[in-house]
Image (tube, rainbow, N blue to C red; front, side):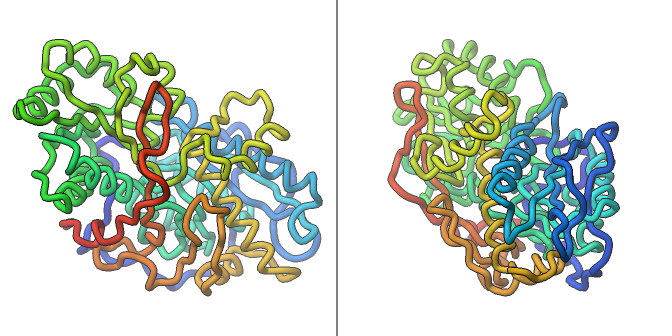
Length: 435
């Protein structure tokens, strides 16, 4: 969850925002030009007809001072090696190009333009907070954005976007719904940015569904080196009810760990409270690094889009990582970005197989996805289908088709399922007071 207030994107759509034009021009397709521009490539050429490799792009921020997701492009390249080692898809190999968007609006737009210049047929399994910067280029070139991380409003409304999860809105709505019955006063600590401005709307929708008062909305710099002031404010708010423990919810992306360092020091001067957050801000690696069972996350609720990392449904992904990326420490199987990329490429494989020997273009992929193709992801998500009626047009989330989340909890230092199966938060989201 990143982004300075000068950025234009938000996590949630604004109801009055015009729907993006659906008249999309077929033409130039996307790619990344060179390693000098922060981009790498699994060798190959453009997609299309014949026996040429099918060219795909995956982008993410890497080596920045805010949230980084290097495991997503690394997993994409490992997936391509795995597919290619088996003869490709319909006899054609995948060529995966990589671009570093650097958590920067201008660079994100350049990644999209390079993609268009290179002739990519889809951008798959990517992370960027700058949807408003890159979607116009993808839309004009008719290049689908398949399986974005779900960090911007544009991913949940652009006609070229095909998200595989419910984005931040679903995570926060699901978390609020759970905390409503478990917590006293709730404080949300989130980025002081446009990207974070409406996070409280979604967690409040879940709290409201459980007849709980709204969370205190507490702003923080996303790239601060310490959060003592924010920790004390959150603790002051959540310890006002002596009858029931309050809950502090940090949602600061990669800087959630920095917040928790300050929070652990500050909490010794206050009554006990619980913590909760969303996957992406915390994973098993962060829990281990913070002390495991003796750390600040013990007992915390964490919502995710997917089953816990130890679930056997992730075994195929882990086998590919072991075979094609053994020793690559950029790829953490428990990372929500890596998991999203795996699911996105699984969907891509199903789409390409459905095209058979036909021409593979961005337009063909988009038409297959819009045309009612149903994709089974092996139980990692519900069956995915992007027909218009499956979205949440009522609140502007026209491309949000998967509203399932899982609830996890930290027990004895391990992230485990709090409840079996998925929880559908569609009704909670539909009642969110966005605007």
